[in-house]
Image (cartoon, rainbow, N blue to C red; front, side, top):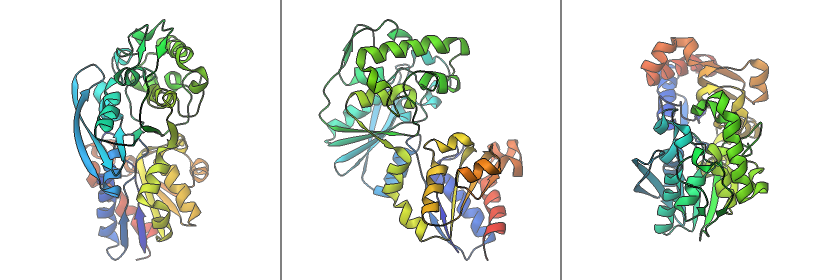
Length: 357
């Protein structure tokens, strides 16, 4: 059999490259004659640059930018021809905030990454959005690129309270916002109310912070705040769209770069995976994108995940034939202590069912 292995990262434990390798190791243990095609994936969040570098080649450029609380953090951008790819999580990721002080956390460093891409001669800059620990509506990014306002733009969402004027800079480059979600900036399904709790925003502060982003939207462009993807990465999507960026689903952008459709057609079975396979996977996430591509190629798709949090009906709605849980097989303690070995064991178990060997 020909097996296409196209997982996302397993957040906090394995990169997409490591996950693909672990799945392949386990599969070979059970079905050594199967032909395996490793195709690590990303949706715009952590791992975006690494996955694209493996697919596109190009030059990795190191940069030091301002972290969410002003500290210097290392980052990398990819220059592939005239296009630069940057990963917002490198400058403002949840791993840098620890889910704390979100009201002070800034996206200034993401703007510095865009500026570094301009300095490198890029004609187009694709910004991967996802995995952020910030909720400042992208105000920090705007400040780093030269925006001015009647409130500090680079000190987090709390400092924006009362903002009434924002003057946007001109950016002499094409911008692309690669998002993994469709949410608007504000409201019931906006950045704060949907993603604020996982970033550490207390329940009682959600209405106030959403109100601040409403003020920011009024000062910049309320219509833009309603566009799909404006709420991505704590509102970074909004800032990029306000600067004239076009939005592209991150999974589709990566799928095109790695030629996923052709590779799915060449396979007999498609494997995907992520840390938690739940119904939110439908909103621009890797497993749903991979499953949709497999369906177009008339190939079955199977998911391997840290946890499977959907039932059979929801799974089918996502285009996945079967999903297998790492925690159910080896237990939570071992799954975190030895994620690669545990995922390899799970893959060997799945191969026993799905391989024809």
